[in-house]
Every structure is written in C-alpha cells, then in structure tokens.
Amino acid sequence: MAHSGIREIANEAVRRPGTIRLDVGQPDFPTPQHVKDAGKRAIDENKTFYTHTQGLLSLREKLVDKLARVNGIASSPERIASAPGGVGAIAAMFAAVLEGGDEVLLPDPGWPNYRMMLPWLGARGVYYPCPPASGFQPDLEALEHLITPRTRILVVNSPNNPTGAVYPTATIGAMIQLAQRHNLWLLSDECYDQIVLDGTWTSPAHLAPDDPRIATAFTFSKTYSMTGWRLGYLTGSGELIDTMTKVLESNSSCVSTITQVAAEAALVGPQDCVTDMVTSYRRRRDLVVDILKEAELLIAEPSGAFYIMVDVSPAGLPSRDFAFTFLRERGVSVAPGTAFGEVAGGAVRISLASSDSDLRAGVGRLAEFVHGRT
Image (cartoon, rainbow, N blue to C red; front, side, top):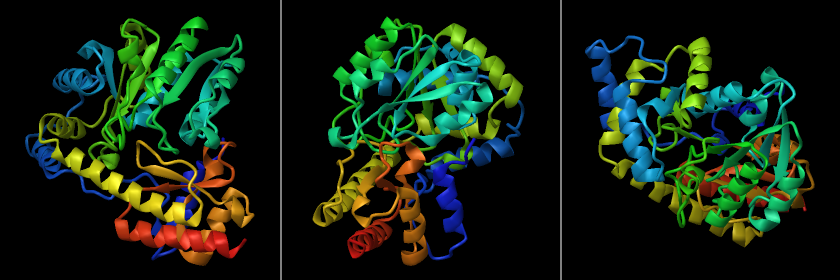
C-alpha cells in the first residue's frame, strides 16, 4: 500500500514555513461557535462515557430528520451507524461486504483513501474513467465493460473529490440500474452533500428508496468544518448496518461522546454557518476560474465540493514532479493529479478551502510557473 499522494505533498509543505497551502481539503473556517460550546458543555457535564457503537440514539434520531430534509432519504435510527469520520464509515462498509479477491469499481480520478482500504481487505480496485474532456463525468459505457463475476461494490462520489463534478440525475439513475442489473452494492459517498455550488444533487437512495443494496456515507467534517472532531455516518439496510456495527465494535467501540453531543448541536442549531461557507467557496471558485481561464489552464468548472483541477501539462513535467518542483521553487503546495489515479496525470488539484488572498497569489504563481516552462 502506498501512502496517499495528498499526504505526501502535505507533509513536505509542513516542513517549509511560509508555504501557501492549496493541497489539503481542510476548511479554513473555525468550527461554528455553538458547536464548540456544546462540546465544552459535554465535558463539564461529564458526558465522556461509552455510547452505543452506532452512536447516541438522540444523535441518530436527529440524523433521520437531516437525511429526510436535506437528502430526501428515509431512514431510521437502527439503519444509521456513526463512525470515526466519513473515512471510518466507508471503511466499515467495505469490511462488512468484501471478501478476499473481490473487486470494487472506483472513479478515476478519485479519492485515494478508497484504494488504500482495499489491500488490508484482500480486495482489488478497478477504475472507471471520468475523462477531463467530459467535465470529469463517468464514462458509463467503459464502466459496464469493467464488471466481472468478482465485482461487489460500485462507488459513486458526487459532489466529487478531487474534480468538483456533480453528476446529473440521469447519470445517477443509469448507475443505479447498472448496479441492479449486476447485483452490486452501490456505495454513494456524499461527504460533500451540502457543498453544492451550482444546481442541485440527487442521492441514489432518494431515487431508489427500496433498494437494500444502496448505502450512503456522510460526514460532519466538511459541512460544519469539523475535520478534527472525527464523525461520519452511513445509512443503509438493517442487515448492512448490523454487520458494519460488528466491524466498528472491533476497531473503535464508538465515536467520542463529546463529538457526538457537539454534532447534535450542529444539526439543530443555526445553519447560516453552512450557507456562509458555501457562499465563500462559490466566490473562491469564480476567482480561480477567472485566473485559470485567462491562463488557458482551466479543465472544467466545478459545480460542487471545494476543489478544482488545473491543466499543468504545458509545463512538460509529470504531475508529481510538477507538484514538488512547484513547491520547492515557488512556495505553493498543490496535490498532484496522480494522487487520484491515472486519468488526471496531467493535472493538479487546488483546494478552494483556502483564503481568497492565498488562492489569488498561489494560482497566479502556478500560471506563471507553467507558462514559464513552455
């Protein structure tokens, strides 16, 4: 198993004080004050005990309301499992479903942690292309040709990390039908469900509410800028959640009670903090798009999440070499496209979860650097 290509460049950036950080998907906003206050009260009120592995019942009841209101998904407390971050929820779902030799269909470009989970499960990733020329939308014909008798899970990630692509309802419907034809699990990673910059997003579980093989993962990390609090959750069939709970019992027992209480405050408290963050990401997206258009380096305008892919192929360097050379010579860190697969080998990912001033300076330096080498 290789280390994450994102972490690799991030670790190097940490060793270089003064670096403009455009590499990691870490919101630059503080956790909302009412959420922090709830966490402090939880400590003072001695809410520091174990909880049910799936999470506090009161939290899961609030999540049922959120899923109905925001995602159009009907669930119940018994069909929700909390986990250490969205990554913990996805890993537990993989462990509940996969056996040695199974295959998982993953998007390319795609979040590197998906493929990092598979070696310790004895499973294998198979990558379906989401070409830059189509705005990083899935190539559905290529996807179907990749299915074999060992295929078990189709992973859908929209809004997408790293591309910011949001899949149309017709595409989601086609992916559901494909999974059903081949008796596959469909895991919808919706960790950016509330960070939609243009249009709307439709969840697979909303389109096919009676399909027991659709599972949907979420996180508090991005929506409420709670990355370090470590709380994600997944909703699915009762049988899947029961098996996932056994996995979670074996590796984490439960999520921090303090975090769970704070998450309840996030769900029922004022939501203008979410609106304000999304408004900032949209403004930053537009700022970066303008710079990239002028520099003729824009690949596709993202509609969700807080990332944008940049064409650096004119520089004539492999993506990873570009990222490290750019960091050393211009003091800006970006994530190489190869961290996310093969399709984006001539690109880098920029995180819009950075300040306007850092984005303006960093992307400006990137444009100068690329064209200075052509």
